[in-house]
Image (cartoon, rainbow, N blue to C red; front, top):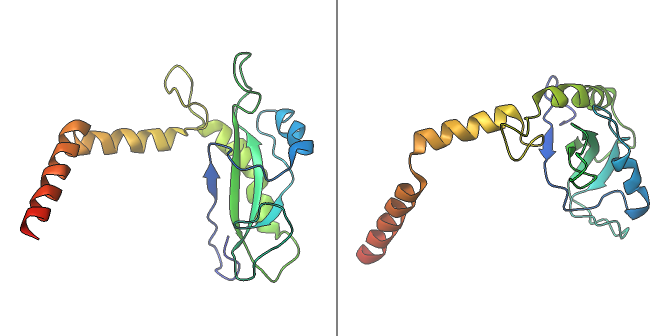
Length: 162
């Protein structure tokens, strides 16, 4: 959310948890989330790995985690957990009410938009609207092998004329 731009809020979501923003000692918090629940909202500096040496001028963000679905017995305990983030103003040391409201709503809303395993192998993190967009793009682009072949032929032609 860019503070100062009234009525504008953009939430980004991260489906795969590659970076640990909580620290190993707090990971059980994620594993114990119930469907639709979220963690507290955290503030971090983009690129910060928790070493405490924040670089000035880097963008600050709010982040929180939500559980979309319970992990099945054979899945990793964090299956079904997604991280969300929003822009954070650098001059504020609090979480604006709008960010809290969006974070509170995110668990309920995203849980409804999570895909189902029998329809999507990347469920539930691959949200239904995202899967629909991917399908439509694939349909419009056509056969991936044919598209790749045409791109390579075009690049080869460009190289020969250069």
